[in-house]
Amino acid sequence: MPINASYRGPGDLPEVIPVFPLPGALLLPRGQMPLNIFEPRYLAMVDDAFRDGHRLIGMIQPDAAHSASEAKPKLFGVGCVGRITQLAESGDGRYILELTGVARFKVTEELTVLTPYRQCKVDFFAFVDDFTARKGEDAVDRKRLLEVLADFLKVNRLKVDWDGIEGAPNEALVNALAMMSPYGPPEKQAMLEAPDLKTRAEILIAVTEMDLAKKRTSGDPGLQ
Image (tube, rainbow, N blue to C red; front, side, top):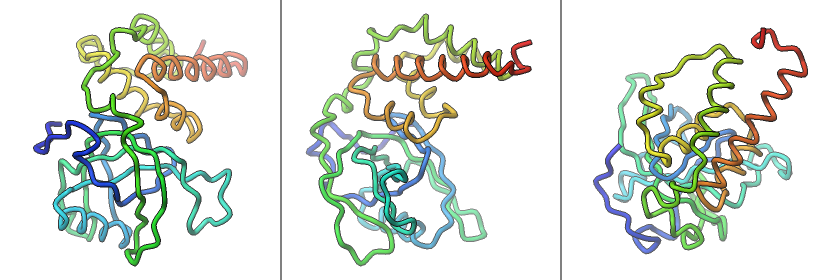
């Protein structure tokens, strides 16, 4: 999804952003994430994102394992900010929108605010490579990634558009597969925090291989 705004580096992004805690949600730079917004606090967040002109929302996972409060769970230390690139009103009070990932961030401080949604002071400088499209993609073991994907699809009896997959650049392929993967918050967070695209692909391959091994051990009927 093309973005009208140009983000050349951390200095092009605000230091304080609204955050949307959502378990299992993984947004990565230049990836697209559809969202169905219906809670009043997040409807207000979207309205304010348009009002301030940035149209930015930080996606971040709640760290349930280390949270003392279910109402306001602790957040993981790293998320990814996205720009709203599509928005539609549903007619029943919801927003249907799409976020396009811009860059990952580290949370330096959660602010005390009057808004119904949470806001954080963030640092993008640790992920300066996110502003360079397709950086490091030549180091990805594409052959192994596609082999593991084929095994996963066979076991789960799924079909995909192989022509589209084979024509996708490594960055788009790795990030799309990571975002769509059916794994839990710890695995998603590990892929988010990977230092480079090669490592993210390796984590995705390793997690998928472990999942396949478990299914083989349990005698999953999909393997017959």
